[in-house]
Structure formats: structure tokens, C-alpha cells
Amino acid sequence: MKKSNNKGFTLIELIMVTIILGILAAVAVPRYMSSVASAEAAAEDAVIASINAGLESHATDMLISTGRAYWTDNPFDALKTKPSGYDASDTDNADTDGEWTFNTSNNRITHQRQDNSRYYWTYDHGENDNAESNAVGTGIGSRTNL
Image (spheres, rainbow, N blue to C red):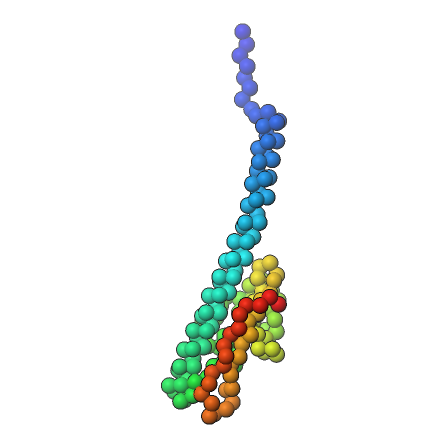
């Protein structure tokens, strides 16, 4: 009597496994993309918070040393460590993945995400030219899609 020696999978079993993996991938990819977008938004919030803290520190230092509190013309100048992707020579909107710029023509901090979407924050440094003014600017605006 001969023993059957079938140790493989049938074609139907292989097709079913492929279909199940396809369904799992179709569910997982959109969730992954939303996780990436959330992570990029959180990183942007951290950079903006760092800039705000640096500006406040700069204004305090200027108040102590000159008797007048003011912010820098470029908000990134208030940071000792610039964010990854900051390009000081680029004075227009961010145009490459992960790039941070300060657009000098409209006073906007700009950032381009991995998905090529661009966001900006307005920046008002106040009146730095008036020696009698101790007022700093109104700060950095909220995130806006470019």
C-alpha cells in the first residue's frame, strides 16, 4: 500500500492567503499615511514652540542688555540649534521635502512635508526700528496650508 506524500499547499489555499494579505495591506496603508501626517504635524508644532521660546529668550536678553525687548527679523536667528532642513539662504517658500525657510517677502515661516504639502506660519517681529518702543511683535500665527 502506497502512502500519500502531499506536503504542499493547494492553489486555493495560496490564493486565499494572498487575498487576505491584500485586504490587510489595503487597511494598513491609509492608517500608516495618517500616522506620518500626524507625526509631521507634531514635529512642526515642536519647531514652532522652540522658535517661540527662542524669541522670548532673545527678547529677555535684549531687555537686559539694551533696556529694550525686541525680536529678531528672522525668527530662526533666535535659535541656537536650527531645525533639520532649515535653509538660511532660501528666502522664499519651502520647496523640497522637510525644508524649513523664512520667506522674507511676506514674513512667513514655511515648511514642506514629505507628501509635498506646504504649511506656513505668519511672523510679526514688531517695531525693531523704534528705539522708544519696548513692544515685541504679535508672534507666530497658527498653521495654515499654503
